[in-house]
Amino acid sequence: MVAVVGAVSAALISLGYSAYQQQVPTKVPQVEAGAPVETGRWRVSVLRGSAGSVLPSGLNVSPGKKALTLEMTLENVSSESSNLYGDLIVLADVPDAPRPTYYLLRDNEILWDLQPRMPEAVAAVWELPAEMDVPKDLRIIVEGVRFKPRDNLYAAPGWFPAGQVAEINLPVEVQIGGVP
Image (cartoon, rainbow, N blue to C red):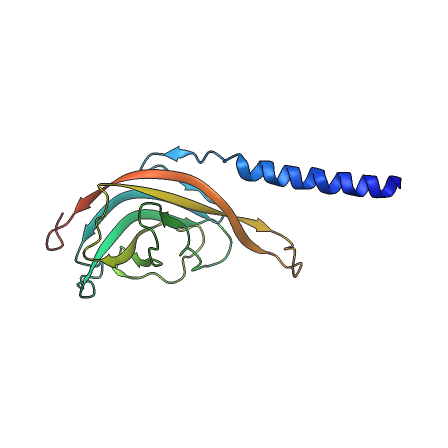
């Protein structure tokens, strides 16, 4: 009887604590544009935002689309090359935005693997419908990851989502013909 009461009490406490955690929102730190943000595997500084019709490669966007571009400095602070930066930046004001394409700004080519401890100037580009209004001040969410030496499923090491680590409000310049 005592064991049953103990088990039920433990289950109720666990359920109550889970409900409490869901109701209490975690405050995401507000960060100024240009300030470095530590995300676990990445260090990112979002510098500038623009909307226009030309990609960093010099090509025009797809017909019926426009490009929303965020220029940033991105550094891989892990010990191995990686291309898992696609979910790092979330556009809070643009629901259902597709995954961005990242460009390496030193040669305006698509960024593939980012080498460890080599900060690079990059641009994240979202192709959005041309009729979509882009806010003059864009709210950006930076997502973090954390390293676990053993995950819960396979007991293997890896990087796993850690939630929002920063929020940035960034003005967006509108480009005409590729020129801000």
